[in-house]
Image 1 (cartoon, rainbow, N blue to C red):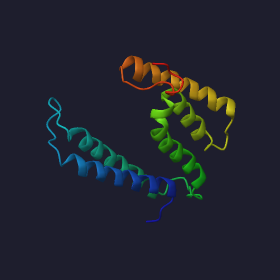
Image 2 (image 1 turned 180 degrees about the vertical axis):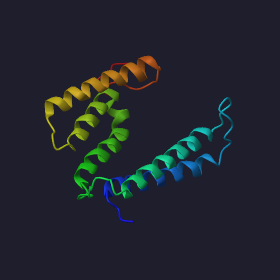
Image 3 (image 1 turned 90 degrees about the vertical axis):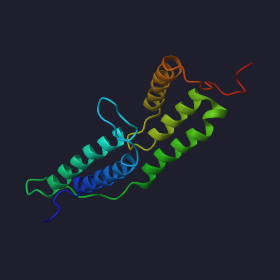
Length: 154
């Protein structure tokens, strides 16, 4: 059999690898039942569902009816523009506070797009900051420093 759709084939292989990873973690813990879930229930269920998805996507990529789709060149700069700001967010969260760190993360990660515009990146960042404040700080009462320590008077 020939791989007709390379993107779907590779996605199916990736799903399968992640499924085996989650299954490997899940079976190390007590699974329990649907009524009384143990710590291994969710990773095991997730692994099984992902394994089914993996099989479906991989087999569909081998079908003669599959649309021919080749894998292009990997975009390293876009990947770095997403991963590096996430790592920096973890580093600067405490000294800069949640608002500035999250705004910087969103704007910097938006630069990975080929359709980057400052105005939309800043608006997106502001909206996500408001959502995070509403959910995590005010909804769940998680304790985050919101602003840089040099701006906050004690």
